[in-house]
Length: 288
Length: 326
Image (cartoon, rainbow over all chains, first blue to last red; front, side, top):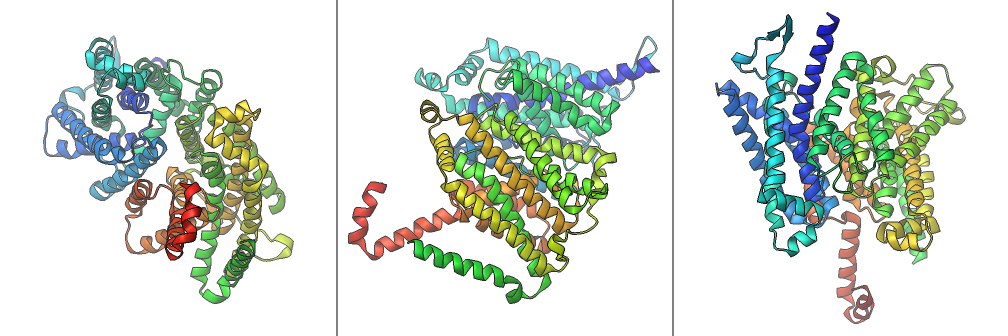
């Protein structure tokens, strides 16, 4: 029984860490390249979950729904970047506040469209039965979420480290002026990174749906976690987002399981330590 | 010029003192008290925003720190005065701690860290059921009675809040005109030059953060005294964002701006909320519109307009005056 508890909680933690990675890798890339924390990112995650709910209710295939909902959110991300943020390019402080305003609008529209009740997303039929290995039951769906997050991490790694686009993004993160100077179309990269980041957040929302449900306030619950991941792991770094996500996943999940009153406090301590001793985060490429 | 300022001040003060007798209706007097409380929140956040260029998204955290401390101390048998003093002391010390963390990362990291800190205060208030009552919130048994004056009627509480805000306003006005305020603005505009001149930029920013935290805590106590109740909903990100929007909407670079912004947002919120439920959409829309079209806020915007009108009236004199400004 005791072992079962630890195994399940560990698995829950890594699955949650995987979701956090889908959320915060995009957040971190956007921050690294554009120097703005996209405060609508939590709302994108929630919107993904609600899109997923509605599409699944119409009988869509789960994986297809995740992709479609993610792309829908991604298009919204492009719209935000092209039509709103670009109006005030150069005013980064203003851009941050605009993303916050947009997140309020999205959250309120979700409340209007999907009411205040929590909406459970059904997991795919095939994954609902627990996987039994050596007498222990493992929740299959969470394992699959973890695998998807790992695949996404590897995919992002190859995109960033092995392709021309990735090299251009890295150049923009490290030194935007030089990147512009050598002819890299940085403003097109902004749109691309926004598309990528918000699509990942949207997909994360659908995949997180069967675990977390879609409910009003999901955005406000997830956004601080993404912030803490980036503060811990360092901005603009994929590895930082990866390590930070699983660290926060473990802390938050075990915090809730063992000391529910103090779950947020448990997150606070590592954040303080990192800020005091490593203000750039563990693997930060850019100054916060 | 100074005589005009004094006359304006006297007129505004007379109007503010006359508010309860002119309005009469208790509902609107209470709304005026709310405006005052939010004006103090906005003024305190503006010490960081307007003079220091630091955008904080965790200001409602002080509502949690000072507010819950005050209520918990009162419930546990402290008298109102010592509860208030201890709550302010606790919250200000925490502001010092939060300031140290937030200022580890200048610029946009500051926004993220203050947001995370504010949400952590919210999360603790929400989750720590045994201490804070969780979602149900906590009730303050009664309003304090400073010098034996009963504050339960709406006009009396209004005057109490007015007195506190007047003291704070005087302090913040002196602050903005002081050498320290000047060095803060210097740290905002030219941090490297300021540190080259021998100013400790970090210390200037930190002290400002703590002072803003102190006045934010004072506003929090007024909030708790007014509502006699505090729940996690009052200290979420939305509250922090509203306070920030008040300062930006009115105009962060002026002293009157945050007060005007607080009045507009509080009135709009109260009026709109009684007709439609979509306050959050409107709040977000105001945010986006103000930042894109009115980045300097209403008060400086109107002042600029006034200056242009005045210029057009006497074109010969203004041409020479406007040359150096441009």
